[in-house]
Image 1 (cartoon, rainbow, N blue to C red):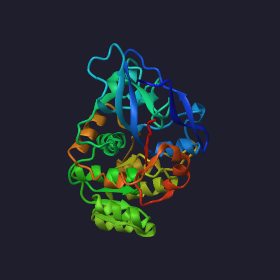
Image 2 (tube, helix red, strand yellow; image 1 turned 30 degrees about the vertical axis):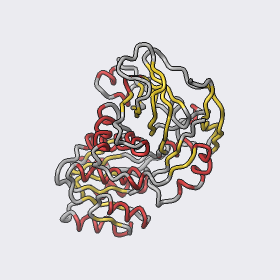
Image 3 (cartoon, rainbow, N blue to C red; image 1 turned 180 degrees about the vertical axis):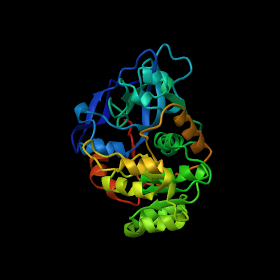
Image 4 (cartoon, rainbow, N blue to C red; image 1 turned 135 degrees about the horizontal axis):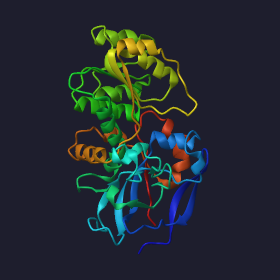
Length: 347
């Protein structure tokens, strides 16, 4: 029996969550209703919480890195059934515009992302178009399944920047997504992989998860990167933090002909000065990448299923949905946890 009301964490204003009873979402003919098992917290959720992003959508139920179980399907859904454990692509695009036709869904002017533009998975139930739902195999736990969406982001980023075998990579920031970039670079055959991370705990985890060298002194970062790349600089630099000073540094870490992957989110007003002539003469490239979609999700889940990623550091801090305010105000600042997950309690 599907209840009429569900428990949800509603962001009512910047830095203010309320646990409310809200209507269970309706699902359309081509949609499924998913009972959420667990949902992990993303950097985007933190930006929304802090008032940097999507404030025009408040009150909002955030959450988009989730796993769950189908409890109902629309009459036009033929390939999915209640009882299946699933994850979901969060990107709901129009399907017919210029960008959708080119498989650039993230640029669709009508894009709606679950938990960002529309209500998401910090709730007991979420409705999702069936075409975006991916069944899980039994060996993938709920905690690991929650990592499908964030790992899909680094899968796509690796494609966008064209990372290939034996290329040197610098990852600036070894927090949750930086660590994932390190692991993805290793899978793609990059060498050496150099992490720049000031926090000792996250620096140690970076080494455990695939970084060949970890630089903890920002004053010596450029010097050490040059030393590790035969004086050239890195083939690829990934900024995963979203800080303007780090973006400035990233430009200096690239070799002539190198590429910078702009991945770390800044606020909308952040700007940095660049020297176009230097980029032109050195034939360097700056590439943005924001999220995973479509096949990226399937590939990320496939890699998780085959244990190609080290996931334990992302699954060590799991808390009930009711504790969400405390989680956002204190636990997220604890660097020993690469991810904090919410267990969505069912009553």
